[in-house]
Image (cartoon, rainbow, N blue to C red; front, side, top):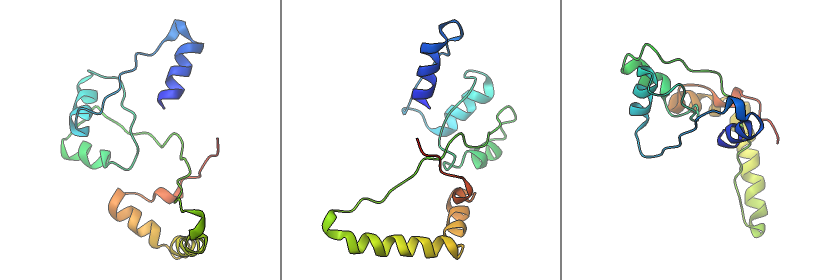
Length: 121
C-alpha cells in the first residue's frame, strides 16, 4: 500500500496524499485517531481484529473496507527438503479442501481469509 500511495503522489502531484507511517502506536490508538478525525484513513492487514476493536471501543466513525489485494504467501524450504515441501503442499491442500483452514481462519482472524483470490503481480 505504501508503494501504491507513493506512486500515486509521484504521478499526481496536484492531489498529493499526506502519508504517515507508524509502528509505534497500538492498533487501538490508531483506530481511535481515525474515529476522532485525526487521520482520514488507516491501512492495515485485515487479520488484526480491527472489527472486534471497533465494536469493543464503540467507535462509531470507523468503517472497514473489503481487502484491497491478497498476496501469495509461501513456505520456504531448502532444496534438500523437497520431499517435506511436497508433503506440506499435500497436507495444506487437504486442510483447505476439507474446510479446516477456513475454520481455523474464522476462529483466529474472525473471517475466512482463504476466500480471497490471490492476485499475482
